[in-house]
Length: 348
Ligand code: SAH
Image (cartoon, rainbow, N blue to C red; front, side, top):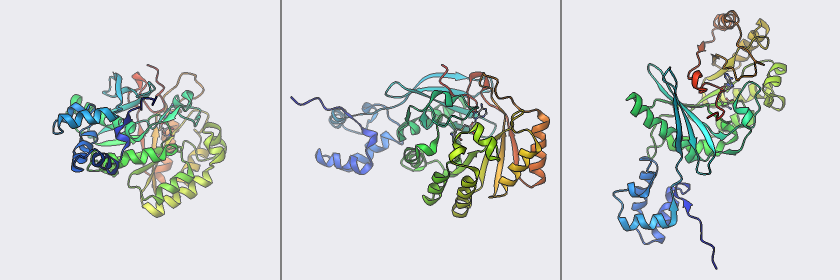
């Protein structure tokens, strides 16, 4: 007996593969374009939504394929307007994504992995360990869901996307790039690459690869310290991927892309709140044109890390300004619902 074949997720097919299927089925290949448009541009979750496709063809598609869409399971709203989504994946796993509204932007913060393997000592996601990579469509769907929420709750379009949710995007490189491809393509959401920022812990090899691949989006690096000893203690990745390698990769990145790098940096009490650390940051910032986001620390319960004093942050800001480096203080958003940087931990 032949085992019942499992239905394939239709969105795993490229347009060319979909066309091939249609030809095999004695259908006109242009029909594949229509279906593809439903799947991506119109984010259809069901074959029956495809109203310009004949009933017969829809039935045929249903026999062969499924559409594995993510499902927003719970949605929490912060008092500052931020929305956090717990997103159910087809296999029951959960990731979180966040909508961040400001006066002139609506930003989607999306996850790239279920959990994270990097073990940064100050981050709640690190406690979840890494379970698996998200597929390109699971990443794309998070953006689609937030885009709909932007329209529904704010009556405004989604303007920006940041890969600052759960996981390390450069350890899921192929799928993240495939998702961005769809997000920026006219067949998908047609958003501008310059509206997208990928945030990484700073994996040197992969930063060079991105430069070689000629990507058009922005790069942010979670730096947090510019001295190897301290950075290695709080971000274990630095032990095998030290600041020298990062600096070399960023130099390569800038040479190829001519795009400024953003450094994300938290100033913590008794960790990096002295002029020695601030001077090291200034020096690092001079390697390639860059700017700094001084992020407010979001406590993750155990009290090991504490936000530095306002004076220490002001000291950083003054030193950076004196050296001509733009630095902004980033207030946390969505803290009350655990939606802020480093707080995504599937608590719900
Ligand atoms: N792995 C990628 C994407 C995660 S982005 C990266 O490391 O860049 C999440 C951002 O929030 C990173 O800059 C991270 O360093 C920062 N972060 C983590 N925990 C935090 C916390 N408790 N408070 C403030 N920022 C935090």
